[in-house]
Length: 175
Image 1 (cartoon, rainbow, N blue to C red):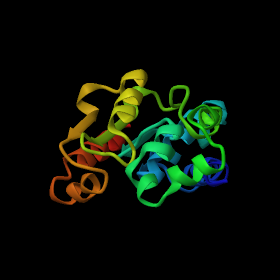
Image 2: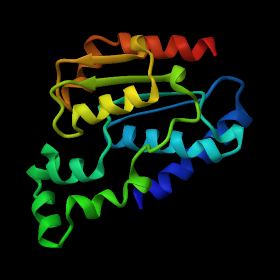
Image 3: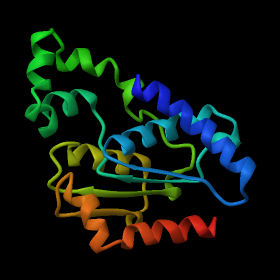
C-alpha cells in the first residue's frame, strides 16, 4: 500500500512543482524513503516528462524485499522474519512481489543523475544489494559514496560530512 500510494504521489507532486517553479526537480530519501524514491524513479519511465525527476539521491537503499523482510536487522529485531515464516511466507513467495517493491529497471532520470550514499555496515537495508543497484544502473563512480557506517549512522554522518549532499545540489543546480 505504501509503495502504490507514494510512487504515484511523487509523480503528481513533481508535475505540480514543474508548473509552479522554473528549476529542476529532484527526489531523494533515506531508508524507506530511498526504497520509495528508486521504485518511483523506475516507474516514471512510463510517465509524462513533467512527472519525472531530473535527479535522485538515495541514502541507505537496497533491493530484494525477501532479504530485507526476512534477513534485515530491523525485521529480525521486531520479529517480522518469524511472523512471515509462521504465516507461510518464504523467500520465494516474497520474491514474486519484487516488481511491486524493487527497482527492476533503470531510472527515468538516467544513471548520470543518480547519487547514492551507502553504508558498508548496513544490515537493515543490506549494503550489497544497494551496491548491486548502483552497478546495474551504472551510477558514476564519483556519485556513489560508500562509508564505513551502518543504516542509521550514514544519514547522521551527513550532518558531519555533507559532501555527498553538496555534490548532489551542485549537480542539480547545473541541470
